[in-house]
Image 1 (cartoon, rainbow, N blue to C red):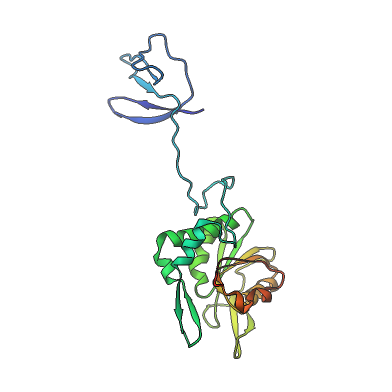
Image 2: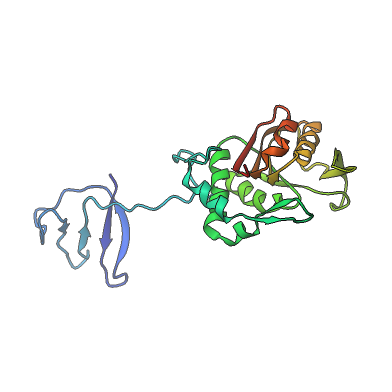
Length: 256
C-alpha cells in the first residue's frame, strides 16, 4: 500500500508526498504507540512525519469522460428500481391541454431547473452507454440538443444535430417522415458521420416514433449502425416503439 508523508521544512511548512513503507531508524522518536514515527532531524535534513494506514477516498464523478471504464456502475432500468428514476419522474411537469385541447404536455423544463434530477438523468444515460464503443450521439431537434451534448462528452463521442428543414447551413441530406396531417423532413450535414460509425439517437420524448424512425433511416442510409434510441419519457399508448423496427429503445420514465 502506498503511504502518505508530511514533510516539514522552512521553505515549505507542510507539503504532501507519496512514499513506500520504510523501516523506522534506530534513533526514531515514537510520540504515540501505533500512530507513526518521526525521523530524527539533522542540520541537512528536516524531520519527516510518516503516517501509517492513511488512505484518501474520493467519490467518483459519474458524468466525466475521465472516469475509469472499470468503475462499477449502476445501470438504469425501465422498471424504475433505481431510486433516481422516481426523482426524475417527479421533476417533470405535466400540463393539460397544451399545445391544444386533449394533450397532456410533458414539460422537461422543470427537470432542468432541478440540478440534482438533471444530473441524475445525464448520469443514467452515461452509465448505460459508456464503454459501448459509441462514436456518434445524434440529437433530435430541439430537446435532444439539451441531453445529447453532455452525454456525448462524457462517453467520448461526437455530437451530431438532426434538424428541421432549412436550419443547417451547407450541404445536407434529408429524410421525410409522416405526421398526423402531412409530412415533414429531418436533415443532417453531409460528412457529419462516416460509414461504420456506431450511433446513439437521443431525444426527450418518444410519442408516435416518427422522428426517431426518420433519424434511424437517415443514419443507416450513410452506413451508420444505430446501437439504440434513448429518451427521457415514453408515451406507450401511442406505440412509437413499434415504428423503430429492430432498433432498441431505452427510456427512463413512462407516462403510463
